[in-house]
Image (cartoon, rainbow, N blue to C red):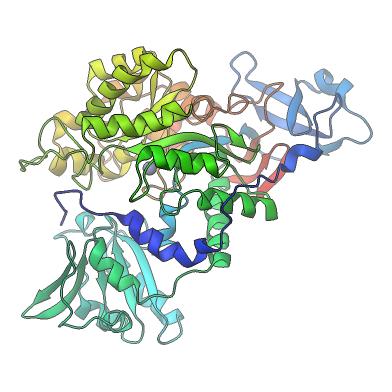
Length: 580
Ligand SMILES: [Zn+2]
């Protein structure tokens, strides 16, 4: 059950849900500058001793690392750093391996809040339909009578026969609580009778324009389609307040840290509420330092405004390229050119299997150029969501035309997902100065579906071409696009090397397998370079002391075990950021 066109706007749903919380957010950003009181000096305030893995090919391992003011001032043997240690130096001797902090260069805090903290019914968590219904039953049993309970990521396309959760089924397993289950695509939700009642919707309620309440013989089935109808259901739920939102954001970032991540890029900041989102992040980071560093990509589109007006709005809020502080920095300008491939709304040169639809872009060549130019004119790094091969072509042509006029700047413009590419596109990306960031676990989770039902084997071979990107001279990174997939860089890196689908373990085009070194660079040094954080991604003198303590070393072990490596703690700027 998939929608064939891209007509939805989940951002508007998230915006409505978060409106009360965000209305109290400040309008101007006020960075906290936590590091200002801790300048780097000639001697170490922290000495880390243990199995250090540097990710520096010149000297891959070390036994001691000296840190001052959050920076590495010495690394090597114990003797190498002896001279930097004073009686005031604190020594840290963790068990396990000390690894460079991992980097997720494209995830979403804000849009993820639409379904946060709903209970996860993803196929990964509930491999059978019975598991999913049992999870609903168990969660409802724990909730007080009458309290709404929400679930997310239910994906019927991954269960035999594509079963649907009807109102009748949900009434049976949840007779005393309003229940809402999000389909993984976001295009559908399934609700029970009490949820309809809470939202004030009856069999007589008309379908809103662009949305449907599925009915049989005039009776609602509980299947609700598309945001305009979903919006009416959400009115039956309490909205989170600012304290709730603060808690959720911290939980999302903490989950990143638990995967060894010390830096992320929030890839659509302001898409729901403009600069207030960034201002609120600064306020929260000021109250207590975030567990990971956050780089933000300012969203180019706000309803009712031209991109130029949106750019002016960011500037007026004090948000300019690389403004902020060491924990939270505004780095990029974000444009979305097409939809989602598994939602059959990515923009392709050829139609989807069994359809005459090949997706589309919501932009015309002119409006796309205007959106890119608004960011380029203000000196932003521009990152553009391109999923299908036609979207890559559409955006690449625009950059080829626009970029020469801006001269030689090291802004490292990016194509996001860059999921399906032709050979010449990768070469042209290198020539014009664009680098790709791949949503690598597209292949792991949806690779089999792309191959068998959505795109066919031929095209699916051109998914996430990490090896070819390197051959073309590009510096690719890997990302999660959370909450599309979980933040788990070591799983992404494993997929880049093995290219096996989760469904059947089949390899999708072995010629595109990355080497272990290439895959690990894509979640460390390349990702750091792409978020303009050249001082991260490896442990070397002069770089940030961002590291994790792990029970394994991916640089010294086989890729099939990488995803099982567990972290005990992370440090950001030499200070503990998270502990298990
Ligand atoms: Zn994204």
